[in-house]
Amino acid sequence: MKPSIVVVGSSNTDMVVKADYLPRPGETILGGTFIMNAGGKGANQAVAAARLGGNVTFVVKTGDDIFGQSAVKLFGAEGIDTSCAVADPTLPSGVALIAVDANGENSIVVASGANAALRPADLQNAAPKIEKAALLLVQLEIPLITVEYAINLAAKNKIKVVLNPAPALMLTDELLAKVSIITPNKTEAELLSGIKVTSLKTAELAAKAIAAKGVETVIVTLGAQGALVHHNNECKLYPAPLCKAVDTTAAGDVFNGALAVALSEGKEIAGAVTFACQAAALSVCKLGAQSSAPYRVELDAALMAAGVN
Ligand code: RIB
Image (tube, rainbow, N blue to C red; front, side):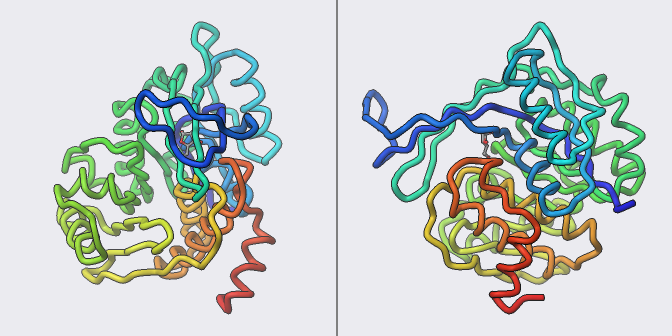
């Protein structure tokens, strides 16, 4: 049996429209065809990890409606263990409204629904799995109290914790000290460090400031520039493979899912980040969130073509 990855997080149904540009406040614009996709940061990361060969358990709360039911069915079809998924008949499943512009940039509004009701008590079945996992992967699209509960449980059992601090939220130093690897984007790094990230130099300063709070490894994801890694008191930029962006939605999620798989397979940070950067680059070539997550054969082929083995 492969080492297991437990993902605790959100599931949404994404309602996506592609347009020439993102509308300004008060503006109505005409976009392209409407597409409905499976999304949610937790679900995207779980699916990305499963497609890359991870042994994934996903802890999630949906409504007992058509969106939630079909999402959980899809997780099962991806080979994800859904025995810790909870369906609440009194709440709607999460939904995200997404606009994507001509450069693949997006803007997202989430109606959290049942995601906002995933409480520590809902993790009862998951607790023994977290305690024995190779790695816990969490984000911030569910209540912070639940994130804290899962991280505390993992830390108590010396389980590696990967925290993708998205969407951006202020976190205590006490919580950060229990995180093994944190993966903020520029905005999130800025909030956590108090340093405005406008360049590689400032990204490095922000990464150092976050590391000083007790996080072992800080990976600042910089989109097309790649990922800046602070590890063992050293900073290094891992450039992103070149690609023409169609949709950057979930690129960060694919990065995190891939990172989790590589670490669970025993890769060192350098190899894991290279693997994750390539996976994220493949995902931005396709529209959608889970629909854009690459399979292992595609990623292995891309890595081989890039001369990485
Ligand atoms: O990170 C991308 C995700 O953010 C989307 O799938 C959307 O559901 C929101 O959660």
